[in-house]
Image 1 (spheres, rainbow, N blue to C red):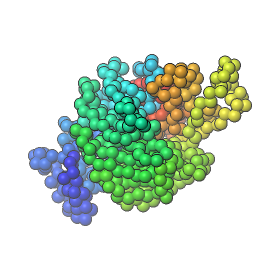
Image 2: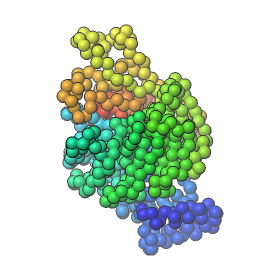
Image 3: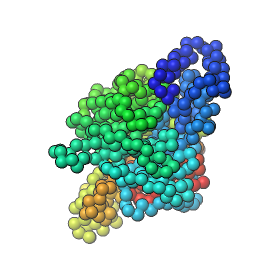
Image 4: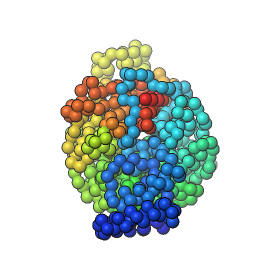
Amino acid sequence: FGSSHFRPSYLLLGNLTKQGGRETMAILHVLFLAATIFQVISVPTTIVGQSDSDDFEGSCSTALLQLSAESSQVSHTPEYYWIQRGGKPTNFGYTKYTAPSNFSKKPPAWTWQNEDDEQVRHSPLIDDEMNLYVMTTLKLRKFSPDGKILWIWHPEEGVMTASPALYQGGVYLLSAGASESGTSPPAEFATVHLVDMETGQLRWKKVIPGSCGPDSQSVFVYNDTCIVPMMTGPAAAGTNKLAAVSALDGSSLWEYSMDEVVWNAAVTTPGDGTLLIAGSCGGAFRISFGGELIWRSGPKPEPNKMCSTGGGSLGPNGVYYTEYHKRENTKTAHISAYRVSDGVLLWEKTFPNFGGGQYPAVGPLGKNGPLVVAVAIGDNPGLNNLSIYESPGTAESYFKDPEARKKMGVPNYVNTVVVMDASTGNEIWRWNAPVWDHFAAAGDEGPNVLHRVKTKSPENPICLPDLQGIPLISGDGTIYSSSSHSGDLTAIRDDNSNGIIEPTEVSVFSPHKCFLNSPSLAPGMLVAAPCWGPMYVFKE
C-alpha cells in the first residue's frame, strides 16, 4: 500500500468488508493472515506504522490492514514516539503512553541550556530509541536519551520554521529563503532536506520555487509522500498551497492550491489514501493523495484572508474537528465536528469571550475513559511594547509591579483548556490558567529581546506564539497544557471524575519562557522545550 497501484485494492477491500458482512470479514482474516505468514504479498507499514491507532476503534477494513501489517511492523518499522507537530500524522495531541505528571516530586533528569538563545518553535521529535531531535531556526540537533549531543546539522541556505518529521530512518526538514542572484525582488524558494537519522548527513535536497509563510507549519511524511506548506499569490500570511514530493528521492508529485489561508499548517490522514487540513477561517478540506479535492466543508470561504491561528485534528472515530474564530468576531471560539466520509457537520459549539487559536487534541481520557476533544481557547499574547524600556525605572516597575502594568494599559489575557465529549461536544470539564497581565509572552520581553534586535539575530527578536501549545492527552488521562503566556507547563487530571479541576489535581512546572508547541512524550519520558528557554527532560 506504499505505492499508488495498491490504493484501489485497499479501497475495494474496505467496500467488500462493508458489503459482505461477517462471512467476508472471516475470509479476509484468513487471507491476510496467510499472506502475512507466507509472505505471498508485502504490506508496507507506512499505512499503519507509527500510529496509536491500535488503541482506537476503527473500521473493519482498517482493523484488518493493521492486523496484517503488525507482523511485519515488528521487524521492519520501528515505532517513533513523536513524529511531527502534534505527535503523529494520524492524530494530534494524544499518546497511549504515560510520563511524569507530578513536577514537585523530582526535577528534570537533564536539560539542554540553549546557551545561544536560539528559538525552538516545535516540540522535539523522539525516535524508537528515545533519542531526541531538536530544531531551531538554523540547526537540528540529535540528543541521546541521557542528553549527549550526537550530531548537529544545518541547512546551507534559508531558515527553518516548519516542524521536521521522522520517517523510515530519516528526518525531513524544510528551509526557506531568498536567492542572492541579483533579481529584484529576490526569487523566493523552499528546500526540502532529508537528513539521515543515524549519521546526521544529508541524503538529498529538493528546491521548490515559491515562498513559505512566517508561521510554524509542519512537514508531513506518509505513504512515501512528503507534503510541505507553501504560500503563493496575495495571501495574507500562512499557507495556501501544498506541494508534494516523493519521500524517496524528492521528485515532484503534485501541488494543491486552497485559496484559503491555513495557519501553522499541519496535514493529517486517516490512513485511507486521503488527507485532511483546516483553514484559519474554519474551512475543512479532504484531499486525495494525488492532490485532488474530495470535499470542502465549513463557513463560506474567505479567499486569502486570515481569521485565526486555529486548525483541525482527526479523531479515531472518523470525525475531523476544527477550531477557529471569525475575522469579525475574534472573541468567540468555534469548535466544529465533520464526518470524514462526506464532510457533513455533526455538531458545533461556540465559546463566547474566548478566541479559537489552536489545533484541538483528540483521544481517550484515560484507559477506560470516553473519547474527548481537548481545546485550548483564549487570547494570543501581543507584541512587545518597547516604550517600557525607555528608562530603567519604567522597565523595573513594569516587570515587578502589577499595578504599574495596569496603569500602562496592559491587557488581561485569558487561557483555558476545555475537555469535550467527542461524540456530542458536551463539556466534561475545564481548567482556567491564571490571567496574564503583560503586553507580550514570557521570554518575548526583557533584555534578551533588546539584544536580539541590536544584533539582528537570525532567530528573530520574538517568538509570538499562540495562546498555548496543542493540548497533550496522555494514556492515564493527564492533559498537559503548555502556556504561551507565562510559560507554565501544567499537568491536569480530574482524578475523582467530578467535572471540577481542584488545586490538588494540577501540577505546575514554570520555565518562565513561553511555549509555541506542546511537550513531547514517549514511554516514561516528557520533553518540554519553551521557545527561548532550556529544554527540560523529565523521566519516571
